[in-house]
Amino acid sequence: MDMDLLLVDDEEGIRTVLSLSLADAGYRVHSARTGEEALAVFDRVRPSLVLTDIKMPGMDGIELLERLKSRDPDVEVIMITGHGDIDLAIQSIQREAADFVTKPINDAILNIALKRARERLDLRRRLREYTTNLEQLVAEKTRELVRAERLAAAGQAAAGMAHAIKNIAGGLEGCIFLLEQGLRQDRRNYLEQGWEMLKSNVEKIKDLSLALLDYSRPEELKPRPVDPAGPMEEVAALMRPRAAELGVELALEKAPGLPKIPLDPQAMHRCLLNLVVNALDACSGEGVNRPCRVELRVEPESGGGVRYVVRDTGPGMDTQTMDLLFTLFFSTKGGAGTGLGLASSRKIVEQHGGSLDVESAPGKGTSFFVRLPAPGPRGAGAGGGGKN
Image 1: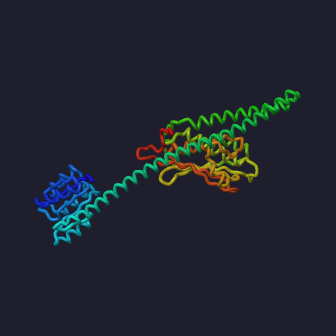
Image 2: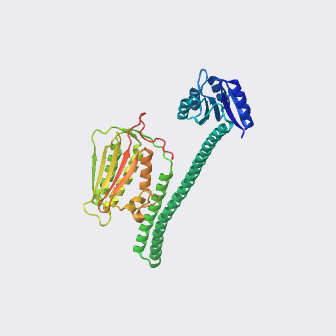
Image 3: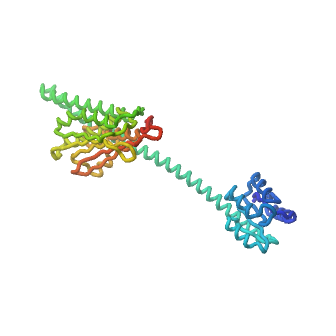
């Protein structure tokens, strides 16, 4: 067994007899005459079991029990009582004593009390081991899940990239065919069509490469206090000619008196530009009710932040499309889009400590919401470093 046990009793004869009996039973016995001496021995030895008289001069057994439990809640304390001390014994049980035995001490009864205390200690030990093993198992399974999710994400990204490259390759095959036919048949119109297709697909390759580089590059944000309406105003001014060309009404509304917030204006400009371009593309597709409208809004957010809204009255999206909207290389524009714009926008917003959400329904248009938090206590509302 080889277990440390602290025996506390002010009577030397009881200590001597019990020490010999307990040592024969396999315990390493440490003894003390008073409560104060018992605490000193306990601090030095840290026994798992304590057997103490309930009535002692100075610190009694009840107080010793409380002070032992405050040092180590797991220690098992058995009280020794006289026949007239049953009320005190009950009080000790209420204070989490393991058991009590009465004088004169019967060895069989004491052994039963000690056995129960050891069983409680063993159960507590096994529970700790089980909890530790369970925590380790959860941590291991979590790591495996993260690895699996990363592999799945990488596979999904590779599949998306392969699909995008396949679309471009198909376009290049078409332009090669036209150029070959134009050369063989001396057909200038074939040569012109093939040349235009070639230029278009080269532009797609360039856009895809730049978008990949932009998305994968760890960007260092450079936040500074700015008027949050500034990036949206710049985007609106940039896209108004494009909106007029498409016959789309582009309207900007900004709340008055918006406070400055820390953000990277160039990064936020790119984020909002992606959203506005998507909204204009949605309004320029087939089957769109005319006139189509794109509304841009900058307004205060509850809690002191700011919210950008990009809303279009285009065809809207179903739930399945919305679930894939921020997936790398997924595009609602077919072969015309890289599928990286919205993923890049979300990344920029999250680097600022904000969120990018979307609401849409078929036939009811689409709304994107960029929510940026208020400045923190040290005046740094944006994420800053942005290395992820």
